Length: 193
Image 1 (spheres, rainbow, N blue to C red):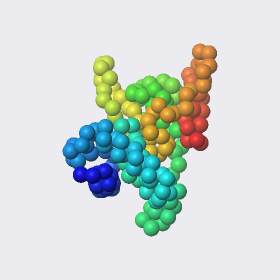
Image 2: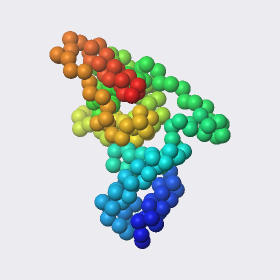
Image 3: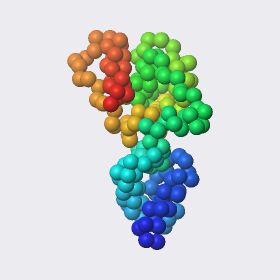
Image 4: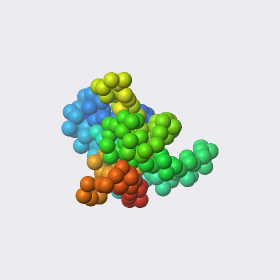
């Protein structure tokens, strides 16, 4: 298969799949090397970005996905009659920031930092597919561990969690409230970029 047909096949696979795919799965389907699949994906990403089209290919961790360009979201919502999601509450942003910067974490860890019960907020963030269960901690009671999802990366327009802005470097915080504020500030900074 020539390069043009490989790129076309990758476009078709990404379009039909709808969710993200790792290059290894694409390579297996097309009977090419994983390195070749990754090179083709990166080439397609650049091509879509330069062509200023309504769709693009994004990288999420080690996976790739075909998505619509963010600036056309209002038109898509109108045609599909979709309501805009309600913005996250301050409590949800706080919990999300604690999870994002410290993952994987338990509910008890988040509650210790925030100083209040977080069950409802964690449930809401899980429903919105911004956080998910990542396993269980090997302690008595085997508490659930939570971490961010690919949808979190997509919503915050980052490729991996390493792209979150660094937390401000302070001397040891005096109490939990100081920790909460620095984490909140960092996640707010990430959403503004």
